[in-house]
Length: 134
Image (tube, rainbow, N blue to C red):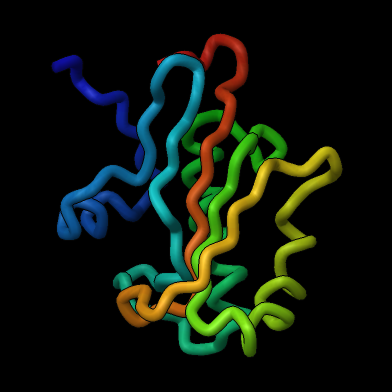
């Protein structure tokens, strides 16, 4: 098996090592980003839902930047929400600041019952800029 081309955001390597997964992998011109939650530096959930969503996007953007990408390079997004019926409006109020301009990426939204203490998670696939092939 080929060695994975892992992308780590600054300052969070230990968190990913402890949880035994890669934040993102470059492969065949794309960046596959693991689900990002609104975790503080120590890995604990941000309790305020709006702040948790913003922090999830900040964590996502740190990984994208480490790979030379921005959210405008995202082609596919999947979001997971605990209790979307009651929380969708609060969550989606935060999204436009980060989502970028149209055309927007494809989106799959999934309601779940548990996210390890979090209320929102986003995972994406981004097209790497020319020369950023992995």
